[in-house]
Length: 170
View: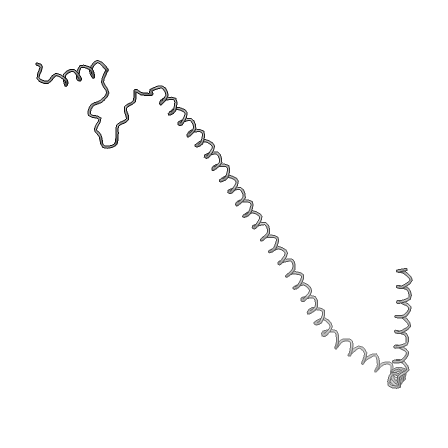
């Protein structure tokens, strides 16, 4: 199906081009020019070379302009692609660094929380065990009250109580 349509379209193009050339060739001005060229071949050759050499710089300039435009646009696309690639790599690096810092911070905070909760639990256990062990032997002193003396042996405390109870016994 595809090759048949291409074949018919090429055949149609050939026919229309041939018809156009025949119409131009049959023109009266073209016929007169061809007759003049046949009568004066050297002058025709000279005019053909002058026209060809005169259009050569114009054609070179046009090819230079088109080539410059093509290279400029392709260079722009290459430069734009390079800049986009570089920007994507920088963005990926920054996001990776931010993710690494976030993960590191999360691990640090989680580890600190874990350690502090275990330390708090350990101190609470030690405190409750000490309270159970020394139940009733620890005297709680209200704020602002002076303890007065450092701890002494029980014997010394009893002796001092006796001395306080007997005023002027000596």
